[in-house]
Image 1 (cartoon, rainbow, N blue to C red):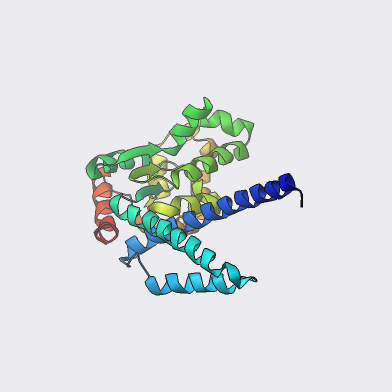
Image 2 (spheres, rainbow, N blue to C red; image 1 turned 90 degrees about the horizontal axis):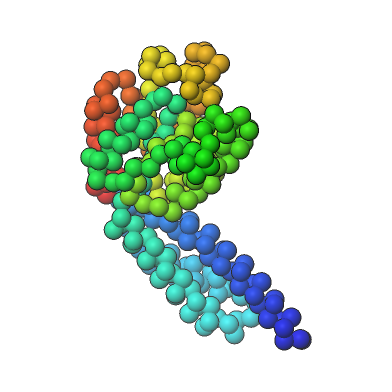
Length: 256
């Protein structure tokens, strides 16, 4: 076999290994956050042993068993380090809900009370693209949604943030999969009639068709908001009360 061709094949395999390792680490991160939420132990020695044995058994050439065992010892150590690091940092708190439900205002106050940084996805996209949301929607809704997904992917690897999302973040499952890696999802459920009282519909691209559109979107999206959230708060009182209800709802997650 020609040496350069063999090396090229190894380089290709190495890239595949790295991509698969990254996928594994992302899942480990997500599982670690879930364990912390549920108060479960991070380390499962019995499962670790079963995983390594299964990998060795999958080998055609058992002469490589020792090397696979050595490699998986290091992989398991890295995965434990990833999950243990989550205990030293705070999970993100992600606010989802309808446009005008109060996510940005509530999120900013919540971040101050919890001593966490605040991040507004819509404002980030507007700054990054140097276009208003209305301008992006005029290009196409997909244009904006693609930028939203890029941002969700980045935030899935962050921690200790209070994140305000756009109302349509739940339209793509991949967005919520990214955010759930290291986040507690809070649904800020503001009744449609309250939203209509508060906001200038003309400034919201998806609501410019009129008040009926608020009810239509609410009914279309409600099941998704409920499906993806860990905590649901009915935001029909004061901002302060909404913030306090969220903090009370977070207690079981934070204390575990």
